Image 1 (cartoon, rainbow, N blue to C red):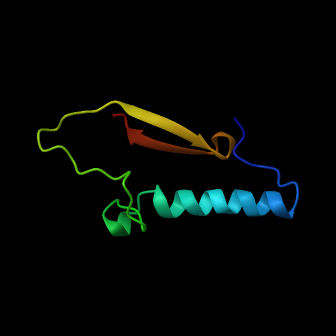
Image 2: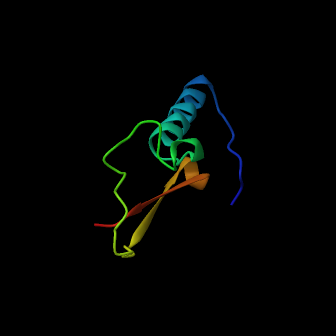
Amino acid sequence: MPDWILILGRRHLEAVLAEFVDHYNDHRPHRGLELRTPNPSHRERPEEPDGTVHDIRRRDRLGGLIHEYEGAA
């Protein structure tokens, strides 16, 4: 899978940037924030005290350039 994307015009660029900004602020963990996101959301869950491992789901964004992971219900 390539690690680049070809921008086809201004509207396409704006859509790609909006998707990336959403990922960066709402999904990507930041070390300076103790692996939380700048915009806390319902996606963040507290750690299980007993160390239970849950099923993980992967969501591809921007054609697979970005992967987001979250626990399955």
